[in-house]
Image 1 (spheres, rainbow, N blue to C red):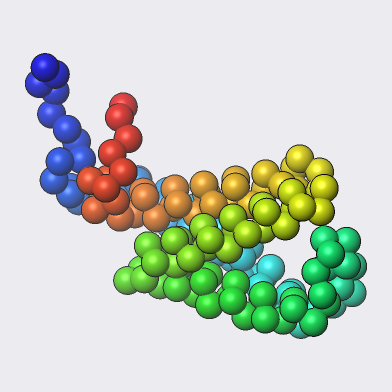
Image 2 (tube, rainbow, N blue to C red; image 1 turned 60 degrees about the vertical axis):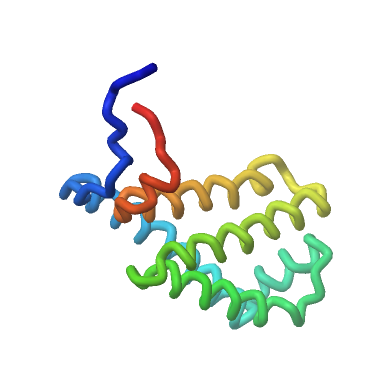
Length: 138
């Protein structure tokens, strides 16, 4: 039996470096997702072209943009960050499915997964209670 202490057994206060690294990752993900949601909301020509290439009706883009903005705002509010990350995971999973169905490039298909990892890393580094839920070993 391994008697090494589990660093995630009890939520420990987040160190300053870990907290700020989480804030940086959260900011990067949040700002990109807010920008992407706003672009879809206003439906400029490059969004119309991307929608057509992916086989999505163009009139869905504003609704998708509103959904992304709501999920992103929930993610950026500290009290609802975990809920926002869960909702963004669903949104980004749908993006992967759409890209797979449309036959997009590998990068376009994997990019939402990378962004989900960045978003979750930001929350994980800032929220010590997630360590007990998702214990990562050193």
